[in-house]
Image (tube, rainbow, N blue to C red; front, side):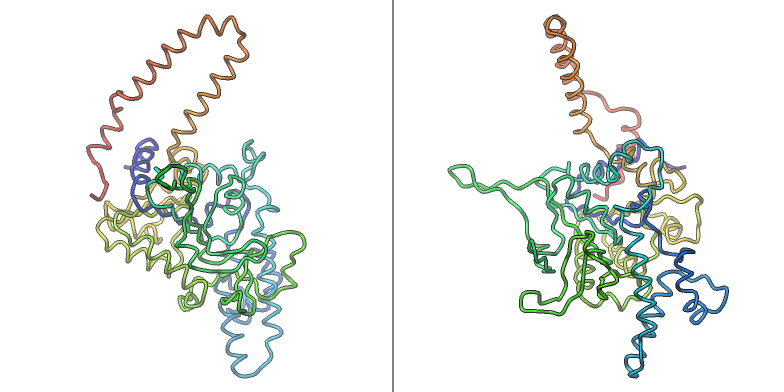
Length: 419
């Protein structure tokens, strides 16, 4: 029987308190923004690629975006070795990249969820809420690692909106170049006492786009940019058709493509992060169809203290799917939220109902009380001041010494922490 939302909320809170917390965000975290899932080729793109589909797969075939892109890249590689022209293949690759760029730009996509007022006001509301809840961990623990397979900029924009400093492997302001040593950096306030003790900055996390990004370009290596990879702002001046080296990486079925920089470094960082002792990996909106990522996760399962939490919505359960195979292992270290319950396994449902957020709840209560007192008038405030203080004092006592609820007791009894 699937665990209730409240049980999963308590469980998630426990695991967020571990020393090493990593998140792998897949396409499901951007679906509500209208970003496409590229496992299948959309009809509008098929019109541009039909000739290539017929040539590589035969008529009436329906290959995935990745499979077609793989064929084009492999064919181009062979033709280049033979000294043959690759003009037609380059055009096809450019069309696919341009379509992906245009349709993954979450600033311009049409929202899939229409009746959500918060989303209509701020399309990155749930991404921001997710990040804020992650950053509520105690500041003495290691930084959260946020990995994503998405090319879009949803998390980038959310982090910027919140003023969170994220270490994404690039350094510089006007000329941002890829420097992997940045991932080893951290932020501290200067010493403000006689002893010179420094204080760790709070709003910081490590951010890895392991399949590339719409904002990355491959250029010729120089003395100042030894890897030849730079990050650019996405604005109206940038046109994908004017640059042939957009670093998006949709070739998930070819493990060998991960050997080149920056992907080799990003996957090394992913493996290193989840293979630490007392680690937990939250896979949110990730359907486990990337073989090279799955291999790293499976390797981490050889560590007794590693825990895998899968949050991925699906209309129906499939025992033959990659997630179904994980479930069949009956390993208590693998926790799978009910796939068919969007209230806990869809990204919005997970952020709203499962991710714990006690700080924000307390802040909202304080704000509500303040506003109510301000507008109730001075007299009513004076009359109720003493009683409000008593209520607040009593509430504080209850919060400190309250007995665990029944569902919390049940979770404590079957505590599944791996230590």
